[in-house]
Image 1: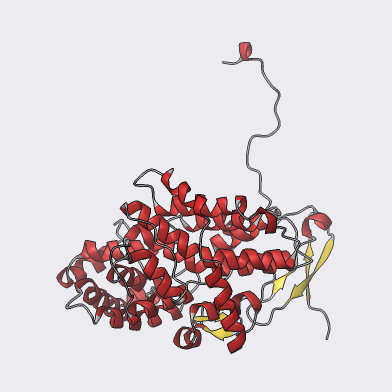
Image 2 (image 1 turned 90 degrees about the vertical axis):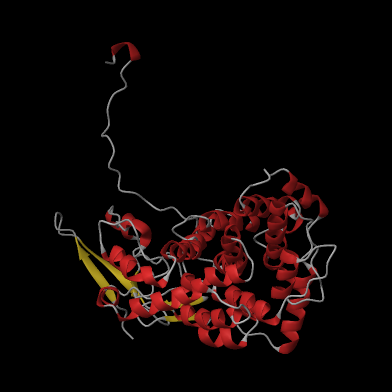
Length: 430
């Protein structure tokens, strides 16, 4: 099969350069311009890297036009309906769904690693009483390298695997400890008899003085949210983890960097914003006015939880969450914000303005409602997102480190500053 390529011509010099066209399993092809600057002295200009493939990856595939999300080739709808979170975690880490024996062994390994070193508890007492739990998460996760420095040789495949297991296991424990510290409650130890999602709920809501057993629907909802947020290709935080990891940084530092990136309101904060938007609208009788406000480009109000920079048809995760949102809220007498969300969704899906702009509900539109119904406060929404996304981060980190072609990340720039000039002594400056 002949090699496909593109030829670029320098109009000033007439020189011609040929670059190979690379094709993945699915999705658009990419021109390999890795030698562009070396051969031509020219850079590409792509703010935000929306037209740039920075790596090869076999973990996640997204087709935004068709509303498709695949983990290792499996549709997210199938995994959400049939798999446990740790089954999906195994898939993302190792590339295949586990056998029954492999899953049992993996679950035992993760359970074994859920405990924290007792000295880590002292870290929490150093935070201000009202510190944001994401701030605690960044600090404590970054500190893990001080406790496990004997097994963070990134060139040792076994060390990489152990670090991955520790991160997946300990993130819920750290997250729950941050929540408990903020409430002034005792930090709860994990329970080895509970499944991953149920254990997380136990550490969040149990107290030493009273037994707590999570409901099956609450466990199902958390399991589902963890699966849906586990990975999403080369998003900002995943790219941050890869870029940090490309320098040879230890895995705990890389995941802490990913958490810090996720904390940005343009990346992980949409679920909280969508919930705040519904509260601002307040009642279905106000919907018409707020729909008009959303259409007014001079009005700062925007519909949150609608549209997505990748999905242009529909977000496949949104429909899944819509169904589980119904199930979670069935146990409550009423939930006016959910009814309001359903009516807002129905209007937006029939309105030409939103249809033309492809503003469909995304995963964040319903996630905040579910978290709130489960009793999880808003400052913990991003923390739960980080717990889920840690699996994707470590999978990408392991993939990158194992790739013999990987090299340190070094984006270039188009310099637009002052041209060279001479230093002027301070006595001669005006």
